[in-house]
Length: 202
Image (cartoon, rainbow, N blue to C red):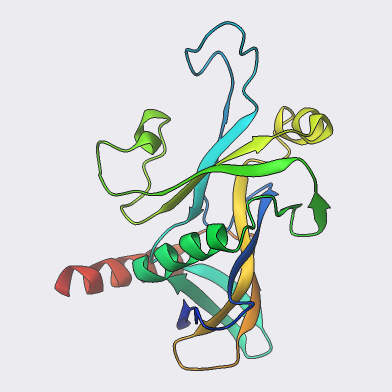
């Protein structure tokens, strides 16, 4: 099956990630952690932080796609993820969020953004998120009581998914990417192994 590396052109005005979506099952398959006073030891005045912490993009993670040309996988390199994370903040998109890529949400703000640089000394490890080096992590503050009560506390959503404009490395026209919700299978595991072995040989 075809594997396509997605890249972004920083000179294009609409390139990059334009919104973060909270979804039932993210294509990157990494759940977020809903932080509250029982999970973080803070002053008692913080009854509930209402912050979601999780992976936004994982490097070399194959994501299943189905398009006009059939089935294929896309992935993002570490360099592209760094560029995408920086452009997202530079463009002032911190308040752009959706529910399942379909409904625009108000009151959700990206309040922390970082790239994982250590296997052991990263904030993600504190919450049991063992994502690889190069992962774009984020914390989203939920100042929307309806979203928190109806979707987060009921576990209707448990992950992040990005949407935006990218181009593939073969210079096909840029396309809007909304991560597909899919589960890993044997083929996907083989692709992960291929990508990992390619990185080790570089």
